[in-house]
Image (cartoon, rainbow, N blue to C red; front, side):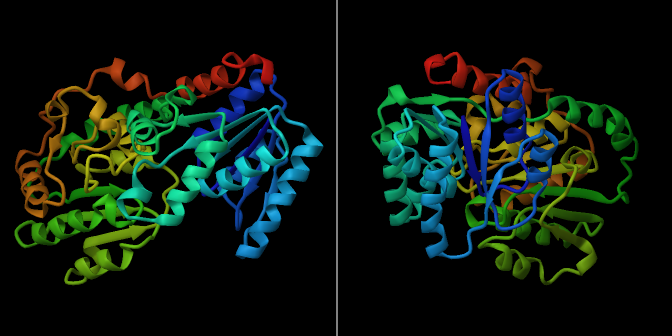
Length: 370
């Protein structure tokens, strides 16, 4: 089996899938499209894998990688090619089809992004890989709906496997610090607000930042900490926060321990600007597992939870005042009054369950190909 992936620097999900496939005695070869060193590369090395690393530098070099991957397929003779990441999927699916690989599978992570923003090239590439693939793994029902109803993919080749997180790690950290976080509810205590999101427009970080600026007028003891890759809305977020003193907020691209970060918060915000903007929304699950008080808009996997307003503050899309009012309410209350989310619902998103589902899909679903 050949696994090709790109567009990732840290992925416990991918590593857990590779580890489970190894446990099932699947002969793995990996191609990693990356422009530099990453955490995920070190983790693969720890698994004993020696990936073929390709470093894209230009469009011309990218074209030559078609031939590199075809030669790798000819050499390894895989019966299954699995790809993840748009760049890896385009190269991998076309190369696998050219090399006559019988089973061609890719993981679809995005939903309606290319259609919503009228990205013609993205739509064309989606259509090409959808046609070439023999199986498509959608990370959520929203992605499946986009594939079938928007892109006219045959429903028989689309399968849903939800993303997963290390629930045990979040639970351990939460149990260690939960009582401490609630112990000091004095009005002068710093009120810590957190966001974990790539800084791109559709994630809604701009609206949360604007609500925080408004909050500072009457609640200067609050502090905002944003973690996420810098993207198209990064400068806009900086402009919004510019009136504040620099010690009132922090923005960083990466944090090595999201469970610990979540545990330090009084409230967590994730407010995508539409119901289908999140294909899945892994950070929803991370926040829920951390038992932190949350302010959300409904998007991605949150649609699958019955009555989410029973557990979180649900606000309207792109509503600065709604986010602000929810923050003020959390400051005034200084406790978590919402009911705890059912453990049975959260357990379906464990890392182990996700990895096992991928393994079963690759091996048991079509055992003749492995």
